[in-house]
Length: 153
Picture 1 (cartoon, helix red, strand yellow):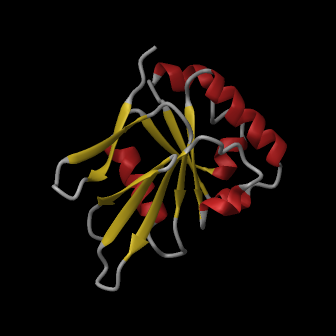
Picture 2 (picture 1 turned 90 degrees about the vertical axis):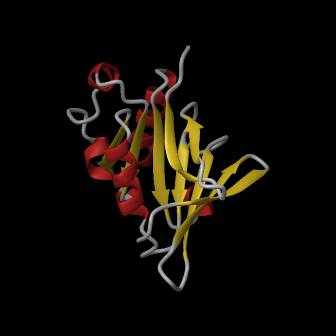
């Protein structure tokens, strides 16, 4: 089984930081920190990442497993997660994709706010924004964390 890799930013020594897409990803951060901008940029810069809204994700005609496989998509990032009303249907779709090695990125305000979604053993990407507009990311994998630099806002 081969997994794809995506570049999430640069390490402190300016070398690229990539993650293996082998599980779901949580993209967390406060309102206005640039989560949507960041995930759209991830999708634009990686051929195996798809950006989609929560409303589109629920529709069967938009998320088609065969089309995702043909397009070599390994990570579907769902924005506007707060709009999900049918949590069971959403979770069923996530579990079905995970069973086929297609993983889901979930955007939220804080990683603790999404307890109703299947997020166990996920990567966590927590966006921060400083006063001068510089954005950084804390990459959390289990008990390990690392600060990653990303482009200016």
